[in-house]
Amino acid sequence: MAEKTEQKNAWQTWKSKHEGLWQFVMFVLMSGVTTLVDLATFAVFNFWIFRSLHDIPFFWGPIRYSIETAG
Image (tube, rainbow, N blue to C red):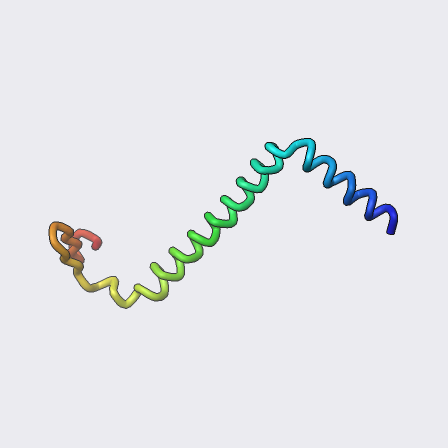
């Protein structure tokens, strides 16, 4: 049990000494998680939920997506 406490203290000491690096590591990890969630959400909406709308043209103002132009 004392070994875990020492490891935790060593980790806390490292984090406090390298605060900027730790913030960068957390930023990169959270950005990666966000990217995965974004890609998964896109896949769910595009390939399953909106699949039935694939053959319907979309016209709204200057935006013109016809079936012929892969809209």
